[in-house]
Length: 101
Image 1 (cartoon, one colour):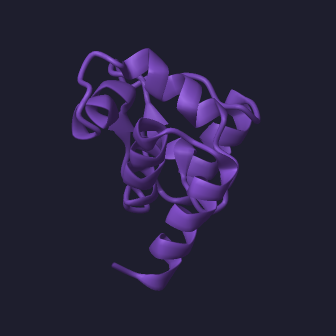
Image 2 (spheres, helix red, strand yellow):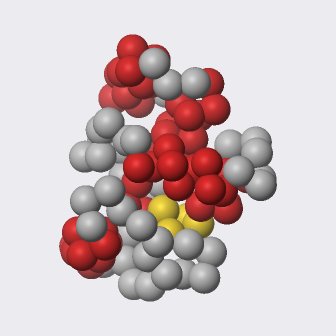
């Protein structure tokens, strides 16, 4: 496990996130640049396949958006979904990474 990931994990613990919230955010941290996953896929990977709405709420509470790339999480129909900083920012970040929806 990389040092940066361990630091993020520690920061999330200090922020007071639940175990599930930390797991979702750490799984989000692991999403590679230029790729996306759906809220549903992320919920499933985090052990609660039907908790995709909860995943969306967790993304909205992301305290480290520059380290935990929640902009890479999209709706199952490949639409953008929401973003705490506006969908225009999400679209811009994805385009900067070369991601096409």
